[in-house]
Length: 293
Image (cartoon, rainbow, N blue to C red):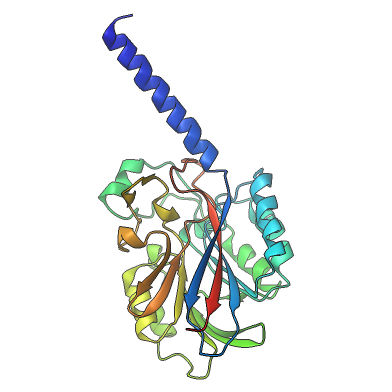
């Protein structure tokens, strides 16, 4: 075999192996643990289960079962930061996955993929900046999803603020609808957080700076977000190449500090059905333990 042919064959085999691994990794769910010292002195720890970007489609029984199994963690609260759906028939599967958690105080916001069905997209476009909504995308029955979640007692934080009671603690919480498709209206919920709350919490799907800056400046101790998929394809030693928003790449996944607030960005549990791969970025749920300083 000629040298050129051997190189071509080797390249093809390496590429096939990389794709096979990336597809396997996209189904290798993992639990990440994080801590944040955001409670008042003397308070006992509070545990929050942060879920994001499930991107469920019918037939993903392994993902549904794994999300159900997280109930054994016994969190004090559950927060989901959007993109539950990737198919119009996925709502029953979402509610099935979350059913064991509905006895726990919970809150959520929606993401763009809860409103619009996914379409094939050239991945290279993400390197040029955040993706744009395509007007031909099919609208999904998002209101049915909201009704299913709220009927089970969870708070809809789409451009709303409320009080969430968890483990006897008062959480002053506010959220916005998805900034990625310009549905955020932070001015409707802006203003200082309640002084006597045990925790001040901001929730958004896409962590655009205009939103998380405002939440931090209003006094949020903790901000939860998703959307980035942690970069989805990460380069070892470099990290995420994109965030699909204006968040710095260094904050694409995990806990960081942002204008004095603790910011936690989940890499999420799913992918678009048209790009079912991850590399060096396993799908995740996060158990965040909040503590006193």
